[in-house]
Image (cartoon, rainbow, N blue to C red; front, top):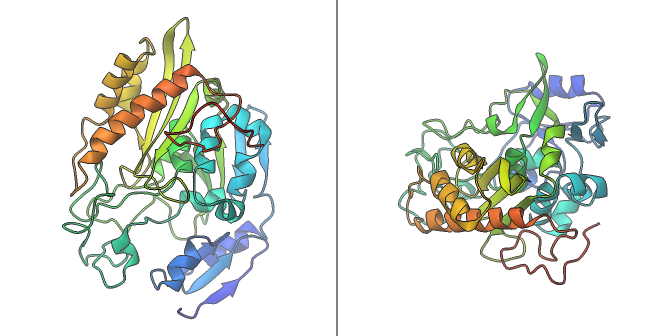
Amino acid sequence: MNQFEFVQPSTAADAIGAGLTPGAAYLGAGTNLLDLMKGGIATPQKIVDITRLPGLEQIETLANGDVRIGALVRNADLAHDTAFSAQFPAVAEALLSGASPQLRNAATVGGNLLQRTRCRYFFDTAAACNKRVPDTGCDAHGGDNRSHAVLGWSEACIATHPSDFCVALAALDAIVEVEGPGGGREFPLVDLHRLPGSTPWEETILAQGDLVVAIRLPHASRAFSTHSRYIKVRERTSYAFALVSAAAALVIVDGKISRARLAFGGLAAKPWRAEAAEALLVGATPDRATFESAAKAALADAAPSGDNEYKIALAVRIAVRTLLRAAAGTPDRLPALPASPFAALAGEIHHD
């Protein structure tokens, strides 16, 4: 491991000042950063420990009804918060399907947004990877790429973003709050991550020194609470990243869909919001035929980046299944295997 400076600021202003140093990295739980450092993939010159900053560990309902989640809230604490999971069940389901219980107890929601790809070539320092070392090539092209992107990829990079949490957030119009050297700003979560293009090492719109301080879910997204689900397909049920995942949320009035949200994970370098499919769903009857048409529209621009054409058909099927589950209604209890396509409604257990 390379040598680095370690600082523990007590205010956001001091943290941002330290974070402006070239080569600096913020440290929350470190569940991703420390692994990258141990493998020689990340070599920060300065570590800025933000765990002592005040006000970043709260879940609060604002005066306008929005729910604000501090960046240092633990994944498990958010998923098991009774009030939050009742209002945003798909987010809780996504969180509980990610990583292991031990990691969920440590990992923070801010860190979850900014975790790096799990592409094996990114983690192999002997391989060419434009994300890790700019302009060195992409060995995933022509390599073992069955888990790689089918949407938004480029010749420079075909990696995917690994988060479950972000997929549900993207579906529910989440907002990211950032403090930086120029002050505070906010933007939709769907704008946070960049597609690779010719510069895949530029993964987000954040600038040096920018610090994610909170995630906000708009009060209007509570309307989806009775019809929202998340499904994740992975190579093993425990502790695996998604091959394909989907978050679906509906508002159904008098037998018709009045509002719809659909987002995918495992398909691109960012959570993929399927707005064309959402438009087709509005005003339609919530049945399998409707959902199949919408799912096919969502994947209309998909193309294999290697040995992964199966992902396109799989994503269509998972979108249909997720929409069907959402239409059937959010269960009072989450399944014992959250987000699993094989979870039966019988034998559900409380997650609070």
